[in-house]
Structure formats: C-alpha cells, structure tokens
Image (tube, rainbow, N blue to C red; front, side):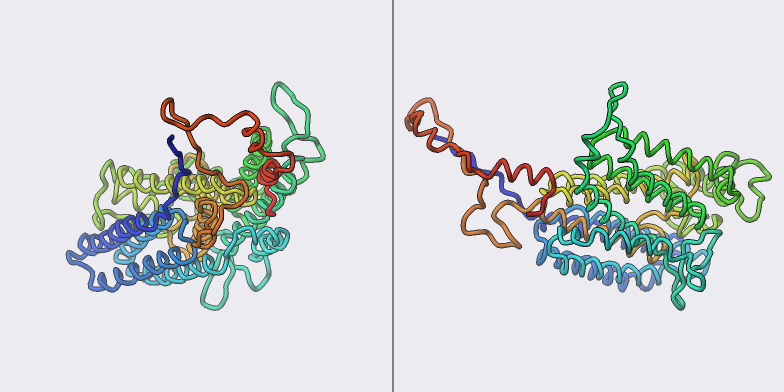
Length: 500
C-alpha cells in the first residue's frame, strides 16, 4: 500500500534571504559604479549607503519571518532591486546637476519600508479591510479631489495633482488608488453575481443590462472629471483602468472590457477637442517631431523628443553608468527616469528591469489565484494590475506608444508619495500572499492539533499484490460524506467570497 501525502508548503524565507542579498548587491554595486563612472572613484558614503539599505531590507525580512512566514518570497527582493536601481540613477543625476534628490529619496525609502513593515504587523488579516469598503470609497474620492482645495492644492508642470504641507509636496492620488482598490474589491465581491449573470447575448457576447451600467458610468464620469479639472491624463487613465480590470476579474465578461475601452476612447476624444490642455497632450504625441510643437512653450514636445534621443543613444548595451548625458532631458529623475536608464544601461538593461516588473506582477496575480476568499482575490489582482498598468502607461508614453502622462515609474522614479504608496501595495500583497500560501491547519505560524474540517487526508492506494483487501461496498458507503456534510456549502461560500 502506498500513501500520498498532501504537498508540504515551505515558508520560503530562506529563498527570500538569498534573493534579497542579490537585490542589495545590485543596488549597492550600481551606486558604486555611478561614482566611478562620473568622478573616477568609489563614493565616500557607499559603506553607509550599503549598511542603510541592508538594515532596511533585513528588517523587513525579519518582520515577514515574524508576522507573515508564508508570504511570497520573490515580491520583496524584486522591489528592493528596483528601488536600489532607481536610487543609483537619481544619485547619478544629482552628480550631473549638483542636486540632492538621492538623499531625500533615500529618506523616503526608509519611511516607506518602515510603513510597509507596520502594515504587515498591524494588519493580521486582509479581510478586515472589507469592513471599510465605503469608508475607503470616501477616503479615495477625498484624496483625489484634495488638490482642488484652494490654498492647499498646487499646480506643478500644468497639472493640479499636488498639495503642499509646509516644505513638502505630496500627490494624494497615489494613496487614493489604494483606497479605491479596496472599495472596488469590496463592492464587486458583493455585486458580481448580478454583474456577471444578468443581461442579453448579442452575437455570442453577453452584454450587461442597462441598469447594471451605473457603476461603470460613474467611474467613467469621475475619471473624465479628474482629466478635465486636474489636467492629469495619467491619474484618470489609471483609475478607470483599475475599475474595468477588477470588473473583468470579478465577472469574467469580456463585454465589460470592450464597453470600458469604448467609453474611455470616446470620453478622451471629446475632452481633447473641447479642452485645450487635453488636446495639447495628443498634439505632442502625434506630432512630436514638428518644429512648432517641439518649440512650443509651455507644453511642447522637447522633453519627449530628448528622451527618445537618449534612448536611441543607449543602443543595445548602453553607455555605462555615468557615461551618458541623461541630464539633458527635463525631469530625468522623475517623469523620464526610464529614458535615463535606457541611455546608460541600453536596451538590455531596460528589458531586464521590465522583466523584474513582469515577475512582480506575475507573483501578485499568482497570489490572487491562490487566496481563498473572493475579496482577497479581487484586491490582490487589482493591486498587481495597478503596478503593471502604471509601468505600461509610463513606458508607453516615453516611447510614444500612447500619449505622455504625468505618472511615475513605480519604485524607480523620484517622488516620496509614489514610493510610499507603492510600498504599501507591496505590504498588502505580502499579507494576502501569506494567507494564500499558508497550508491548512497552520494559523499564524502554529500548527493546529487537528486538521480543519474538510481538509484532505492521506490517500491510500491499493497495490496489485500484498495490499489490504478492498473494503466492502457497505463500508465504502458508510465512509462517504452524508447529506449533512458542509463541504459543498463551504465551496459555495468560497466562490462567493464570503468571509465566514
């Protein structure tokens, strides 16, 4: 007789520690190579920088061992590597422009990592967030419209997406996307049966009922209001794309995606023809190399074209750290840091960076597939989509695939609010992945004395010879689940996303 045991899930903290060492080595080596490439010597503060980044990385690793031992072992090292590469490029631009952005970014990195650790410690169960579905909606909307408050909002580079708090400027919409993701997940997990099943079929495509279009129309109108009032195409596109993506994950209906894309294209086209600041974005995209568009001030295509020339001069392998001229591109440390990296690391380097983003998004989607409750599936899927979609929007704008937006590359670009929000996203994904990967019978790192009801027992396979006799039919029927067995009910609850 052979016995098949359930697969044992390993926490993976040892794998995470090895990958974290590699990620830290990449970031610290890049920082040192920047100094060598620009000044001919290793930066004097490289030891302090390396110790600081190592303490932050190992500190978060220790928190995961303590509070989330089964969290995904790849997510955190991937983010540390991206953060380190971004810090190295910002430091390289500081040397060229005699600025101090890298010091401030390092401070924001420390604050962000500490806050991510606090989220993991304080949020013991991600399903707790479902209680605050409509509170998250209010908080998200307030954060989005906060830059429009007189005396608090500030217009920078033509966009009204900033607020000033003393010497600091923040972009509240970065935190708003997390709150709205929580709201979308809570709302859709409750209403997805109606949104998924009701509606007529036309040419094999199941369409929603007219009365079920309310949520997507509201999201569409809100995104257009952001586009018009705050002059920010990126935030508008991100919020509406997040809602449509989570709506598709909840319902698995392609019609919602087609309706959402059609609505946004029509709305953006109307806004481009009715509002000059929106139309200017499309002019820069479509006619970037026209002399009049290039020299127009403000709102010309000079930044975009210089970024394209920087990418072209990088070639296949790049000029090397410190050997290019990324400082010729305005805002090279924030909006166009991807072009700066493309010039000095080449096509090979930026493809490697995009591959890290791909791995990060894949692990987030894998977390969404593995978690047992519907709310967690939608939240993890939405947060992973935010990171992937933001990368597409930024890189697509820099390479003229789509119009240029004001979004920043996650973890790479300079910006405290963006870094803070994206590290919170990482913390939430780690928390959800701990629940997704934790085997049955293990609660907060302790093995239960008895397996939970409905958990798989070892399966006995009877051999052809020497094995025990097959049980009689009456014995098999006695061992079969009776009508009172709760496993079918548990399965229905799981699919509906109930948290009971």
